[in-house]
Image (cartoon, rainbow, N blue to C red; front, side, top):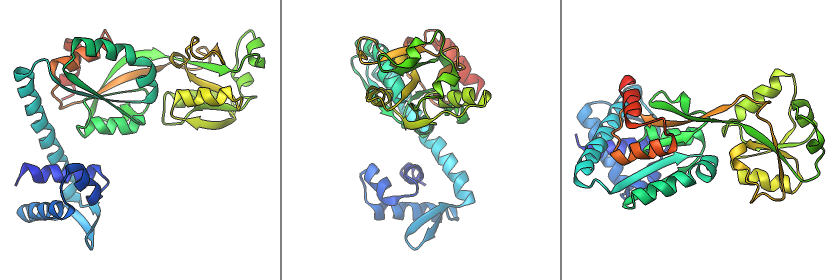
Length: 308
């Protein structure tokens, strides 16, 4: 049994059982991967995959167990490499952060600037996606930490650390009727076409819950994964926008007006997700503390150890 075979197995699973995509990502040939997996199956004496001709269609029940063990071995191998790097190259390395557009665009820039100033030799990689996608990147070992609001609490392989709470605002064009109200209400909002986040993103569930609690049905005409897209279409007067307060910048968004809506919706919590079995280099702890000052190394380590 070779480590390379286990890596091939994990790569096939992470690419939806698509051999050609796995081979491309591994910079090798599809026949080469197929051969190594067949050798692994022969050595183990069982089939890992169900095949239809040459095409893999699903993972067998014992294959699921083997895959989980293989993923753990690959993770531990990566942890060994990180331990070595920690003591041979203390100032260099790579930090991969998986996050959503809103966090990358509005919450992270100042932190990243501070981090890169302190660690100029560390290569920083931002991977953007939906909360579910970025959580999967961390559980698979492709990213060190996930930063998001929705969905990542559903991944039990991750240790969840709360960072900060935030709420929402309603954005409208200048002279919009909602600007004349003494206090914004959900009933008033529901009278207009609404542009807001896709359901999987940035606290959308809190918005739905607020309307449902009053028996109101919001007229959502457009959803997006990107706060800037929402603002663009509100500027075109296609509707009013509901977005994270942090995403409204008065100096940049001069064609829009913001109305506080924090009294209408439950606050959302942005969290950092870390794989339970990961080894974090010292600069990863520093990044986390820069982003959430209450999450120092001792706090993070204790949380990770308590979830083992």
